[in-house]
Image (cartoon, rainbow, N blue to C red; front, side):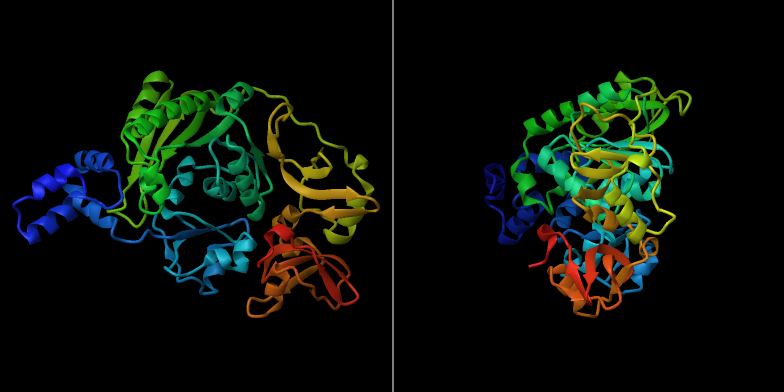
Length: 459
């Protein structure tokens, strides 16, 4: 117990000492943080303190690139109930494990803290726009933006830390996103490359993480007053970079998962003072004692000027269709419907073939993890389709689809990497969990050879 609090308890009755301890302290949280929050919250401090006696709420958001929320609700899974500020967001019951379900592997939903679902909608993204998620890992807000874009336009998702960028890339793949590039660069490098290029930018900035203290004990140990100040300084630098990449008339959303005014309202104020061409349109705060979610802050800025007056950037040149690998053309002839579900914009990246989105800039000199949708790799006399392609396809986009019901054993055998029956099929087949694409298999002699990636197989 803090010495100051202990001194104040001397001479009090046992009942009064218990009351003062409960009122003054949240066990396990830095005392300096608690003193700051008492000043910020005033009379609401006690309600805020009591919220830490409750377990954090857990949520998932339906990936509408795969299907609508009603379709998932029909299965009656996980005790779902709506998150009020997120159209396709749901709370799930304590004890449920949606991360250990075939629909999770198929990218039907993304497990996301409920308050975090409030931010991406503030961008008001429209299909066909150019959008940047500047601090994107692990991918919750990127995947939410991608759903709003409906596969149209260009989404660049950036993460400065290499390991986190790989996790971001994996989540983009799992949710079947076709029009997203994943980049591992600094905000400064991108601001030099893309002046005035984007219609909308999200800056979900690195912060002191105070809003996650209830669900993430590790973030408590890393907190300090000094770190709050360091975070605020870095946030202003990132916002400055973002401001240069937004076209006139564009929208910028700044968000954190902290309560700190230095990182939230004061950072927004400093940004407006430094950039008079911007106007703050709205802001929000989500408090754990006033809603079913953790702490979150967001501010919405708009840049003055005529929209769509983007500065030109060099565009990516693709491979002409006539120069595509013959192995891929043979695969597409057999496995994809003749009216191919993709725009014809191809490029090679290493040994792999990709489809890149419309309006894609030249990526030369950038650290790129995913330059679009991976189709696969041409090998000697055959084409090996990518897992990303399977997850991006819908059953109706291929003539060979094997649907595995949830109430049978074959779907779990497939996820474990085992061979399953395929009586009438031959060649590459899209394997689906019910009606959701899950991975590839190759059929022959009544059996389906399993091509579910070894690194993803269930133990």
